[in-house]
Amino acid sequence: MTPDKPLRADARRNRARVLAAAEAAFSAEGMAVPLDEIARRAGVGAGTVYRHFPTKEALFEAVIHERIEQFAKEARALSAAERPGAAFTAFLTRLVDQAMLNKALCDALEAAGSPVKPLDGTQRDIWAAFATLLAAAQRDGTVRTDIDLSDLRALLSGALAMERHARAGDRPPGRMTELLLDALHARR
Amino acid sequence: MTPDKPLRADARRNRARVLAAAEAAFSAEGMAVPLDEIARRAGVGAGTVYRHFPTKEALFEAVIHERIEQFAKEARALSAAERPGAAFTAFLTRLVDQAMLNKALCDALEAAGSPVKPLDGTQRDIWAAFATLLAAAQRDGTVRTDIDLSDLRALLSGALAMERHARAGDRPPGRMTELLLDALHARR
DNA sequence: ATATAATCGGAACGCGCGCCCCGGTTTCGT
DNA sequence: ACGAAACCGGGGCGCGCGTTCCGATTATAT
Image 1: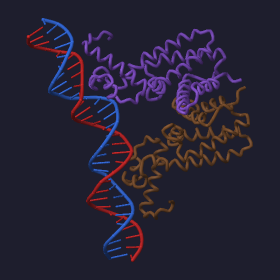
Image 2: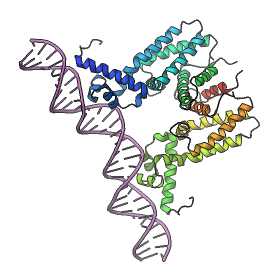
Image 3: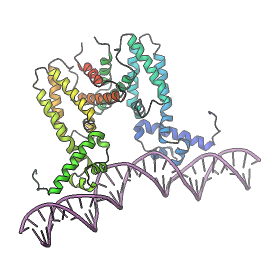
Image 4: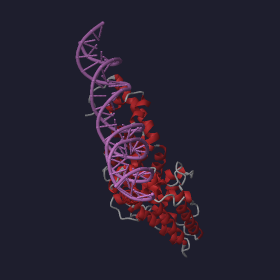
């Protein structure tokens, strides 16, 4: 299913342009950006976008997919760290930081795990890796043990909401996330 | 500007019906509910709704106003408590609990303090009272002192997001909020 | 060069929703 | 009881957006 058909030259060029424009637009405005705007930025008609991606959401996932996969890879790399607690903290912090720079990432992460969208294949990897980090940090004694993967998704959503709110109010970045992480430390 | 004009009997009746229907609808679905739906539930045309409330948002605020005021009153009452830390905790917990039962409250509280909406008059009261509770809890040594009102709004947003996510994933209610409150305790 | 098929672009459609308009109806003072 | 003023309802407008359609255009094989 990979080689399909050799795309015509102009088609390939336009597909690339659409992807680039979509990446920029989604990153800046998230899912909220109108598809026409993406087409315009790509110098292409709306019809062209739909020939390459059946739906707006498909385009969104195509754009976010490698980004998410990259984070999943980072998480897997961190799972071999000698200090699991620090690895867990670092990963969550990094996720939040990057999401603040990329509304698409924000939208993708916040949509994760809602009952209507039972964790798309792209996201399964990152959450599995995150779960591994969590488990290690808990075994390590750094993170309280009454937290599970479902809680983690809720926590991330909360962290994103808090961080977004805080920055809109000119508060220094990262503080809210640190606060949350404090709460996750094993009870004293 | 209060007595304006004595409303005609049918007008007064319809206004009351609209308010009741709006309360139910907003409570169940938040701002997302279409105005036509409210009119339908009230057994009234859309035009009638707009004769009494110039805009959908005006209707929303009319509905949420007394609710918010009531919470502000509770907060002021709690500010005389002998254990400020407990009072602060109780109020935040109560706010989150109630918001989980009332999407309108949720929407109202999350919209609070965004740069585009510089804290409407209705909300000023509740946040002022909440700030008093916060200050007392900080003086009491229960809550860390590097938190201000702006942070508090962010924290509430985060708590709502976490709690919503958690309940959608069948997690017991209140845990995420407790977690956040833990983080607010003075550093050990 | 020419035929063929893939591709393009943007006009057009459907839909949902906030909001306005106006002919018909109801209330209320007299 | 009756006329004027207030009020009602729901059809309709405008808008934004996702998606589709189709005549024009362009790449590619021969």
